Image (cartoon, rainbow, N blue to C red; front, side):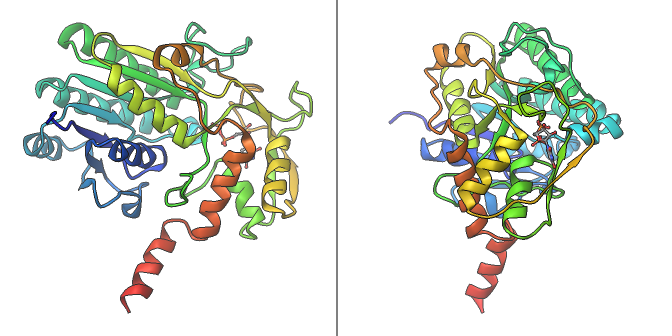
Length: 341
Ligand code: UDP
């Protein structure tokens, strides 16, 4: 019987990480999640995965982790990931994100791990003037967050050259949606992303959604983004793992189609059947007018083909998760308490 591969998923209790864990388990991998549970949720980690609570800043915690398990590969999601916060507190990103990744990469190379997949970002490209954005687009990070991911990409470049550790850097556009079966979804505190905020309004948890700027050079004046279903992201991670033997790679992950903020709100109103009150606010600093991916390379190399490319399905899955879990993962805890009493 073939050896069952063991994968370490840092940040596996978070939004994209937990969907990747589900995908890995579905494809018969052993999974160890390492997460400090500051932003992640215990309830997002399935019983089939081993959850180790810990922080990448701790050398002792990493030493324990790597002496307990032997990993064939690492998927690295754990990081601070808010563009706005990084503009206010660059240190948290340029120091913490980078040092934590360095600690992990050092432990990986010392322990002979041969494959590493990094959760990277479209923010690497800043404000490009040509669309779509492919892997040859000039890198010019739009924030300390994007810069921190680029620095980690460079560290991985040298980990390959010096230690032969192969890496894949996956630059996501706007991750959205929820697991199609409704058991995993998006639950951030604070929530800053457009789709969950719009669904909060639909659910009556917020009075309105503020549109950050209606004076952009787009057809309705609001920003255009390429929303990509979180399960399609998970699929790309697991595919890339399987082919990451000979050569490191970088891929942009999006649907190649953009929607304005107004179009997202209209689609959400249609999907939920609710009115969504809107107010116009000022532009959010650092927001590029348009971000659309070219994912031709990943399609060609990995045969990746998004299963849920249309915005309506993405929002429908996010709404389904919201209806089943009105308080996010806290709803799981409430159900467990009620079930136990
Ligand atoms: N946005 C908005 N109001 C909000 C949150 C977001 O108008 O309350 C806009 C934001 O300016 C951007 C788009 O929605 O154009 C997507 O933002 P999000 O924060 O979801 O992702 P980002 O593009 O920053 O990664």
